[in-house]
Length: 180
Image (cartoon, rainbow, N blue to C red):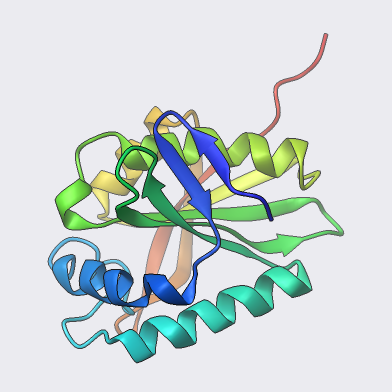
């Protein structure tokens, strides 16, 4: 997959050279990201990052997921991660996920992730629906989905597992604009 550039962000596959910075970003973000993404812990290591990158490559080869690093176009700094995953080719929908390292939060990065990847899902991957699934209580991510143009559809009970607990999730979706 070729890198995608959008409004100061570069989306690209992770490289082995990103492991140190990815691990540092995860450890920096435990307070905000770790609450909602159980992989984000103070013990997250470069070895964990390498294992994740290998999973990302396997998903991309299988065309079941596109897990990407999000980098500053200007500085090259790792700002977070984004994904189009859980791809369902039969019904043409996928999940859109995102996380932003704590030092880059509240700068519009997550909204730009949604604005960049939803059109990619439609125009390049041929999807007809993009879902954003957010644990109830994650108000920051909910605000991102709304600002990114996603429509709230309802609450899916027992939808996610967080830190060993089943939780309900807000279901948002984006569909392509109707051509008239």
